[in-house]
Length: 114
Image (spheres, rainbow, N blue to C red):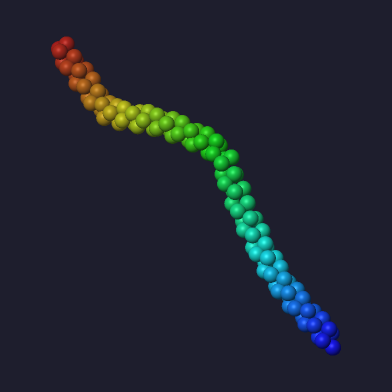
């Protein structure tokens, strides 16, 4: 019976070792799943960075276009303001000019002796 008892003890040791290995394999499997998830998350972030980098030339070109448009609009606005100022000046000067012309005509009329 001692041989059977030794075999039984050996079998229990092997079974305990297998159970320990099974637990460690489960831990490794769980950690591997975490690493796979982290890798996927990192890959998603890297893809997003790659898309942003690809768009930089487009954004730079678009920014340059906007700067040109702003400069053109500033020129147009300056011209418009100048025209408005000239128009305002002219509107103030027309009555003065009309009065001056009338005074000149009246002066000429009386200078002739009428």
